Image (cartoon, rainbow, N blue to C red; front, side):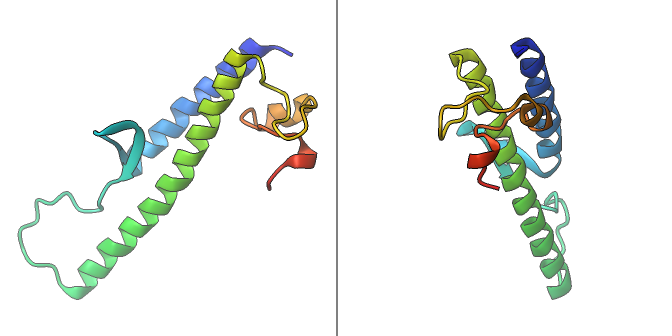
Length: 120
């Protein structure tokens, strides 16, 4: 198995996910490995919003929050896969210890388990 190939692929995926994340979230200044959804409004509007505007802003924040959670989970999976490469456990199922099929890793390089033990 070409680990350099998968390492490159994972790093590219991490960069892509972080770009997507930066559109809906910002890094937590107290914990730079954590992300927080950004509000839909920039806070420069000084007028009092009506109920519809508040509802729209809340809905937008909810949407950003769910996207942020999903993308952050994906980034963490990629980071974990990069760590497995460094530890020498990449491509080995975390559940049974068997090799993960290379086709599965090609489709999803951050896979930690074989198809048999896949949570999805």
